[in-house]
Length: 412
Image (cartoon, rainbow, N blue to C red; front, side, top):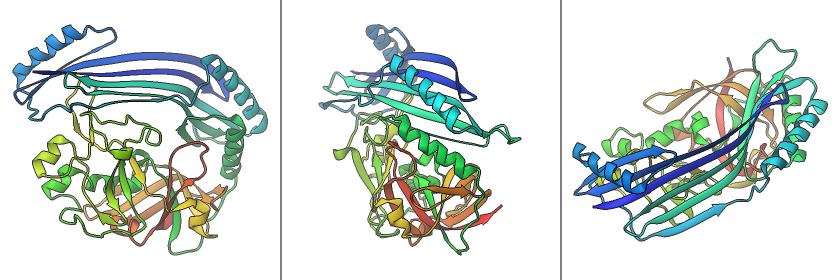
């Protein structure tokens, strides 16, 4: 029998904002610990919140083996790596002072809008170790800005919102950003009169409907079962040669642990799923890789007290340009800020309603566009319609690239 400890500690210090003033402060410190035991192709798990006794958890985990939960794989062994990212060093006292100063300047400089929601310091420490020599620790400290804005003359409850995580903060960068955002929101803009318009999406796929079907199709279970749009296309060039797509556990860029829930990580924390347009492999965990005889990419997640299961931990799109301006080459683009309710057909056709977007020239937001409908097909979007990806965009310090696609756009 082998034993494994999986522990996640999450700490946060959050300032709640209401009408551009500090309304309250909230601190949280949550410790989640689980012990996994492995015996004869079975797994037993027991977890607890807060204070824990590891020996007691191990006994209780062993007792759950009677439920015969299968896990016919050896625990990851013999790897030790600790990563600490503490670039954001502001103390909570300094953070409070900074927020007071920031909000005061925001009230004075952007009088026609009010801002709400929260600004936070987030700390995490994730540990995965076992009696086979696995010893992995990932620690991180980030700044998180999450704001909802409302034009004071508006009848809406909210008019828009945006947020990002970063490891740097300077209000002298944030204030011009918000001033430009609100200034653009107050100006109505018209769509360029082109059949296909460049559309800018932020890389983070959970909020980017344009990537949804691609991520779904790259899943090892759908690929192996034959239901993926990419089934049978391995090693074939199916996308634009400029388009590369990686599974990422890069702790700096992906804001995630460098290892997955089974203790797997890759060289450089990247695994190429699509490289220069060629579909290389779907993402897999141990179960999926074994079931369909696929390469193991290390794509498993789990609740602290759950069994590892398949999911893409993070992504990275291969950069083609330094800036969005370089990609656009003088053209105007649609910058998507808020979208929800999109859908894909089984054939990969996308219909995406966009609630908030701006006309963008690659350097600044020009004006607010009406609500839009964007459409495309997965093989065109990342084929001939893929214009490029760049790091430098609207959000300062956010370690997210921006993807530009040439798409059909119309008003709703």
